[in-house]
Length: 118
Image (tube, rainbow, N blue to C red):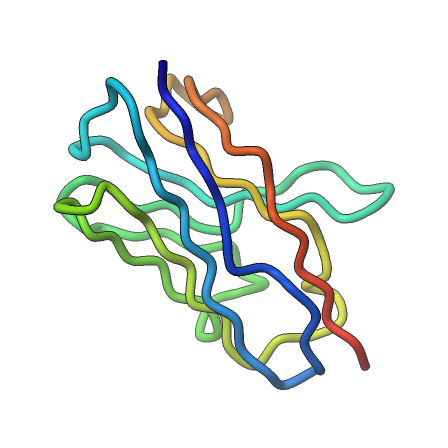
């Protein structure tokens, strides 16, 4: 059974930083693409960032230059460093693993709340 467990969310003031972690356990290789999504109240879930097994990354335009995704394959963990946070970054953040295609992923975490106060 595969589990993705996010951590690191919380309440932060605008301009602050948070680092999210997503630890994978169970029968899942560290060598696959991982993603970070977020969903704000009343909005659709949106892709924030992805990282391949080789370390290639993509970012949503709204977070480029402020967020950075990284991974530690030895720990089977992916991170999302979020800097210069804005109130509009407030959302539940989810990690995903093993991309099937488009927005379809095989595994999802339970989510962690990030709240940015103005």
